[in-house]
Image (cartoon, rainbow, N blue to C red; front, top):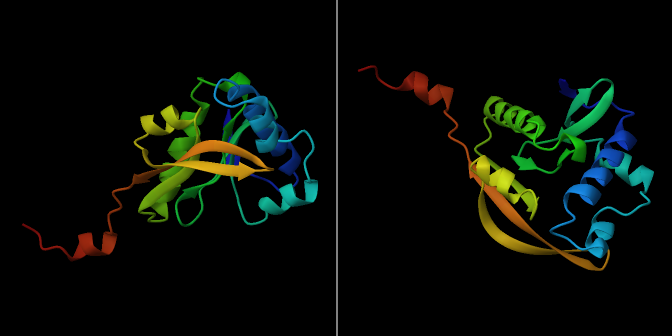
Length: 167
């Protein structure tokens, strides 16, 4: 397994991964109508590619296939976090979450937050995220329930640490 940054040209592979994850993993928590609204069978390729112009997600690759991806932006927002359904419970999500935490530490991000599906909520809770609020989001005239979850990080400001008196 290799974890690396996304490469331009992989956008449609990520859409297939996203679509597969939504349609296979969330079936116990969302109706078919909700899943179809969240991830329709047809995608606007130009819009999907545009989403990744300013985002540089981490991807997990295994034997030349993308099996997971996630991103975190400069504000600490985790917008995408998807693992292929055949790779669930195989520590792939753990690897991605570790990378997100490392990036947050390097970039001195104080808080991580995400809009998390019902299905993903236990995973995020296991990483110390807490529900800030329950949300009802309308997508393509269909309402889906999710959660705004957040995790404060204990970012240590190196400058203030250097300026502390030694005891």
